[in-house]
Length: 308
Ligand code: TXD
Image (cartoon, rainbow, N blue to C red; front, top):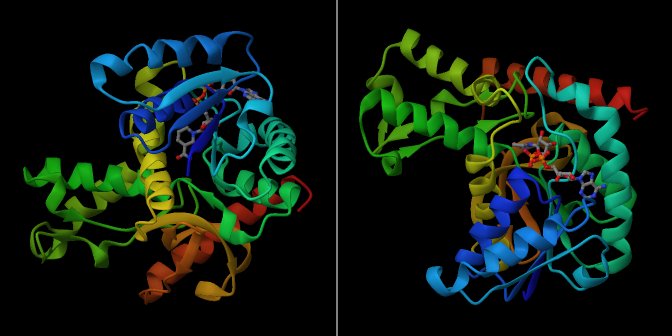
């Protein structure tokens, strides 16, 4: 794929663009934003890093979607970020309007594109994009699980003082406080986490993961996380454009999987050239299944707030 567009060139969008260019995931990356000059300025600044970083991906910025035509992937980060004390769902009405307008432009300019949704509330914004574009579920995927899993893995590695590379984990569910870190799937160099830490410590790490976004919001005081979120979005894009078929937790439109249908929720997905290529239905304990369904109920509640 030759062109990738990032819509919304704020913290997450711009960092995503830079990371994708440094990895040369496409020959062209286009940054779009409504703020005059801003995506052009960031794209030019990033392009000027190319001789030092050694990449040939051309970066450009635009206010309109003409230059994005024919993009294989759109990473959508347009919208408002959470402020301290603001829940993800407070954002819903405003961001739904923005995502509706952005999605219309994507469908008009790149009807074959894959959309990687990042804007919060993530699961519901993916639904708005799928409805507006009419794209099949294979081509609208939400980013949250990779980030939540990375947070969980990073906390486990800190706690045990081991390499993050050896920590494998899976976090399912909606991107909110009711997300479902699957403790039963966590392994550290092949050793189950339950053999390395007692229940209370594990529960504390799970809790920190659930509140991981809020922890950063509280520290920054003005805006939300973007380094780890952009890394997560780029990992998804890389699996798609390089057809790597990685298995990553992503928000996907469910059609009966895990006994759920008619909503986006974080589940293990295979991502390749065609976007979402497969959903894996892992077996869950009763408690995990219950937690996943409770998380689904939270997502549905936000959909209903939008008249869904
Ligand atoms: O796990 C996840 N999915 C997330 C989601 C992790 C981190 C951030 N998450 C959400 O992404 C966050 O709650 C926000 O909804 C988005 C973007 O977060 P970011 O931190 O990048 O916000 P910024 O810096 O405010 O950037 C948003 C940009 C800003 O430059 C606006 O001018 C622009 O979006 N914007 C638009 N661009 C294009 N088109 C329209 N209509 C538009 N409206 C605003």
